[in-house]
Length: 350
Image (cartoon, rainbow, N blue to C red; front, side, top):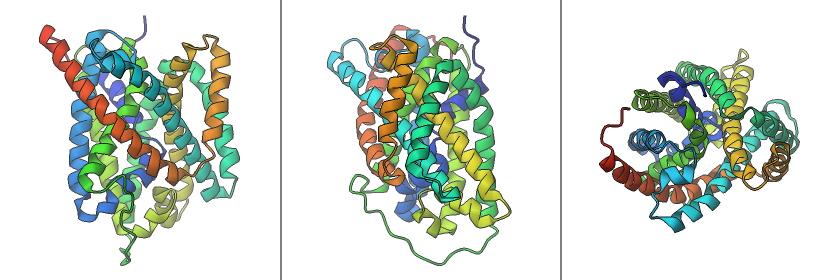
C-alpha cells in the first residue's frame, strides 16, 4: 500500500506541478500578467482564486472517486464525447509541458554558457524519460525537496532587485492576440496551469488521505502566489529583463556575485521537476498503448526530443494560451462533476 502524503507533501507537489520553466523564469508570468501594466495585480488575484478553488475540487474528486484516471475524475459518466476529447487532449498537453521545459533548459544552457540550446534540450528529454521510470512516488519526493528551495530563491532574488535603482525605460506592450486583456490572461493562465496539473496530480491519488486536501491546496496556492507577486514586482523594476528568454535568470545575473549561477541551478531543478511530473503522467498514458515499460520510455524520449528544439518564448506564447482555452472546458467539467458527486456524498472529509 503506498505511503500517504501529508498536507505539506501534497501541497508542495501541487505547487510543483506549476513551477516549471515559464513560471520560475518569469517568462510566462510576464506574458500573462506583466504586459498589462498596473492591472497585473488584479489578474494575479483572480488567477490564484481559481487555482485554489478548482485545486480543492479536483483533489476532492480524486479522493471521492478513488480514481487515478484524469478523464474519469474530471467528467461524469454522462459526458462520453468530452471524455473522448480529453483522452486525446491530455497526452498532447503533457507532451507540450515537457517540450516547453526541455526548450527552457536549452535556452538556459545557451544564455548562461553558450551551449547549443537544441542539443541540450534533446539530451534532457532522454534523461527525463529515463527518470520517469521512478513513477509518482519519485516525483513527490522531488517536489517536496525542491519547491521550498525554489520559492525562497525566487523571492530572495526579487527582494534583492529592490535594492537596485529602478530602470526608467518602457517595454513593448502586449501584442499577443490570444491574450487581449488582463481578464482573459488571468483566466487562461489559471486554466492552462490547472489543465497541466490535473494530469500530473492524478497519479498521486493512491497517496491521498483525509483531512489534508484543502490545506494542501492552500499551501500550494500560497507558494505560487508569493513567487508570482515578487517576480512580477522585480520585473516591473527592471523591465528590460522581460525581453530576455529567461527574465529571472537575467535579473539574478544582474545582481552579480554568482547569483546567476545559483539561480540557473535552481531554474534547472524547477524545469526538471515539472518535466518529470509531466513525463510520469504521460508515461502512464502511453503505457496503455505500449505496455512494455522500457519501450514506452524510448518512444517518449524520441517524440519529446523532436518538439523540444522549438523556441522557448514562442512555445509559451502560443501553446499555453491555446491550452488555456481548452482548459476552460475542463474547469466546467470539474465543477459539474463535483456537484453530482457531493450531492450523493456530502460528508467527504477534506
